[in-house]
Length: 259
Length: 150
Image: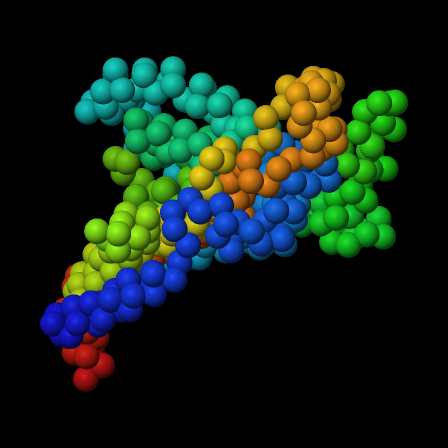
């Protein structure tokens, strides 16, 4: 079995290496991927069409909005699946979430806890910055959501799981994750209700005040602001599911114990 | 020597992705432990991510973010550019060769998240299997399944 597996891997690897001669060289500006019209359109037109300097965000949340919407649904589904696999009963069992004792566990290090106490607000503030500033600098809903989720995970590691879960109970976790999907899909449905295509944010310009003279027209700014709204939705889902995955996996669904 | 440079040095990114991907595939095929299989799956995904991101690289190009300092200053800069002999089409004209391809970055951004989600579900299933059969070794699990069936 081991030899057979190695032979299969070696043959596939050799085929891939053989095909590699047909690929463009590293960093070749003339490569098909770089020369394709869609890529050139995104780079040259994203700024003027959406007023979002970060092209990755513009493509993610606007041009490929469907993809990202169902990506959010995938994360939400994965979180629900993990909670379903590892113990649905705990959701209603409020008593089991209380910490074993109100006193600080003796083996918890005071230095670790106090360092985390100082660090976590800064992390969360930075997470909000990454979400809100994702249009203009590297960042966005996924990245900011993960940073926010990790700050909760850090608290759960430094203290214990029930203490961290007192802030966000599993029920609220699922609610926040679902809220993120609803924000994203709701923005899309809103543009549908405004007689435009699904996720065409330029239809939402009616919600913005009329553009002052000299500024960008409001249908372009509506796309920029629509992206911000869906990024916030993504951040809700990602942070809640990250923390949910951690809490359920680290305790095998019991939501108790050291970590 | 030229051939080596053409195939190995100029296409080093493809070698890295092929080697990493084969390590992951090997772990997924031959390892007996479910966690090791999941680690292999993660390495495989990382190889794909590296491949896509390396395809988006352009020589002499910067990150796919338009540098800007507020709209008015952008317009001023463009005017300045026009005096220098550059294309004077205003701030909206952005040369695609100056920025890396954003599309692979977008695709991989979502692929990373899906990777985390699938890894999480895989680990959850492994925990459930461990609770059920008391082992994560594939042959032991199969044995335990057969003995409960028969």
